[in-house]
Structure formats: C-alpha cells, structure tokens
Amino acid sequence: MAFIQAYWPIFLVALIIGILVGYLVFRPRQRVRLSDKTPVRPHMTMAAMASREGRQFTDSGAAAASDVVGDILGVRVHEELPGASGPPDDLRQLKGVGPKFAELLNQRGIIRFDQIAKLSPSQVEVLDESMGPFRGRFARDRIVEQAQFLAGGDIDGYEAKFGSL
Image (tube, rainbow, N blue to C red; front, side, top):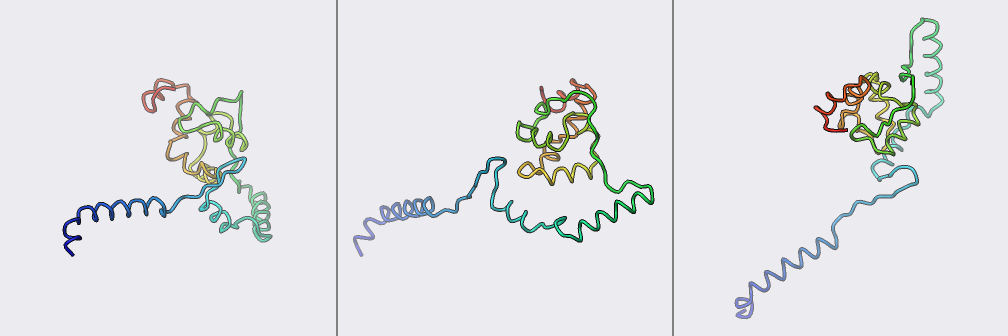
C-alpha cells in the first residue's frame, strides 16, 4: 500500500496515457468507398435503397395518366428546365461549383448562367435531389443568386456580394 501511495502520480499518468492510446486504437472511423464517378458513403447508399419512388409499374402508369390529362386540360404537368440559348458558360466561375459539379450540371442540360438564374425553387429542389454527393450546394453556396448576377452581366454586384471571380 505504501508503494501505491508513493507512486500514485506515475500510476495516474500511465492511466491517462492508456486511455488516450485506447481511444486512438479503438475509435470509430468513417468508411468511405470511392467509385469512378462520385464518392459513395454508407449513409448515401442506404438512402438510395430506401427510396424506390418512380421504379414501380404503378408510378409509370400515374406519370403517363398525368401527361394525358395534362394534354386534355391544356396545362403543363411537368415543369421543363429552362433551355440553353447561346454558347456555354464556364459554370466553374460560380463559387462552390468545381469540375465534377459542373459536369453533373452539363449532363442535365444546364450549360449557361441564365438557365440556373431562371430555375424556380421547386426546380432547384428537384435538381438538387439528383446531385448525389453535391446535394445541398444550391442553397448553401447560393448558386442561383450567383448565376443571376453573372447572367445579367453584373460583375461588380457579384464581386461586392460574393468576392472576386
């Protein structure tokens, strides 16, 4: 007992070091698997498996029926993304849009700032849901607002609000 009373600070330091080493060895780690196209994380694969909307026969039938009824009533059932008119813009000028995100936008037919600027909030929401690992960038980086400045040619207003190009 006298031994423990004499060396208790050393035992305390050894215990603290043991706890730190144990934490470093046994701490939980995030597992990330990369594919050729986009990063896939475990929580993203589970969300994709849980969402089966639009993959059933009944969903296809409902979409077809809404198209036919829309034609009969003369209303637009499905919103179309704004079309491109003119040469493509460098979408990477937008803050938060890198080469891969720009490529995803180009694959969806968005090649100009004015197309992004004309998107309605519901179109932005639908487009954002299809962006995979880039989901949430439209709102977080205020991409539509940036595109409105650049589509209108207001470089000074853009730089005042978002910084230099």
